[in-house]
Length: 190
Ligand code: SF4
Image (cartoon, rainbow, N blue to C red; front, side, top):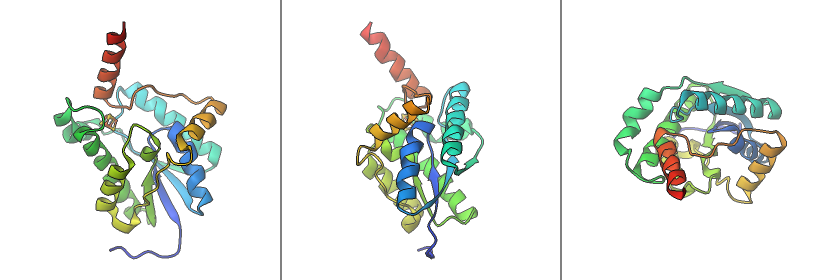
């Protein structure tokens, strides 16, 4: 079990600018000093990746937090998740996707001497927070902060903040398969 001191330096994995806003506020209100980490090799196509990254930078600037970045390692994401391409959203593909992003965040947490890490992913009503907690704990044990950001109207508040800041709000989760499924839903409705 890793040894922790009293410092509350937390690395927040950020999936997009919209979800980050409320999570930054919630963590700060609990006394954590927050640094963001944009690690999302799931996002497809690349122009969408750049857009979500840009909106995350805007949020980091607004809240005056430091934002760490990474490469968009799409090949690595594919290696871990493409085998589950026909799974429905919320299934095995998402588990593998959460695991990859949280593993990388934990690695950064250790390398850059943060005490804790957590993720904005729990703010989405489409994502099972308990499953994310399990994965986070398996990876980072007591360094993982199991915070359900969707509680206390977290998502609603995040949307309100994003409207005020005029942030881009995406209409699919992020990967090539979630985009495919969304397009199919739109097609089916016609
Ligand atoms: S639907 Fe979202 S969480 Fe699931 S694999 Fe795709 S990008 Fe990852």
